[in-house]
Image (cartoon, rainbow, N blue to C red):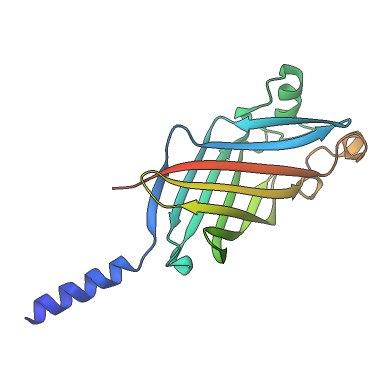
Length: 181
């Protein structure tokens, strides 16, 4: 009987922990920006999100996303070459960006906020991510964040002119998540 009680207590403790997820092939991580008044969109073809999330256990939730910056594409070859070069992502020196979050808050309904840190171009800054969570198989996380590119040293010098390239960049993600075994 004592063994059964210990087993039930251990299982109850395990049930309170957030679930670990892997992203499916249809997951996306994109961005929107403006150049000389014209908006454009891009996406990263290679990124690895490690997601631990449970709306009932926000304290046990974690995001850790690795982004291969050289995989950025805007469907414009000239712009894409500039993005990975030394004036922007500088992938020769800093090939990866990383987003980590361990503080979450509920915003009502299925909406949440991750208070995370983005490390990009050797600089780490807070970047909150607002997202919706739809449970299921797959679970779906859809989120948006706004960052200031100059805080990360992205597009300085002539590119710092806000009439040419505004400082704010919107990040959009849609993750289709499968529980990890």
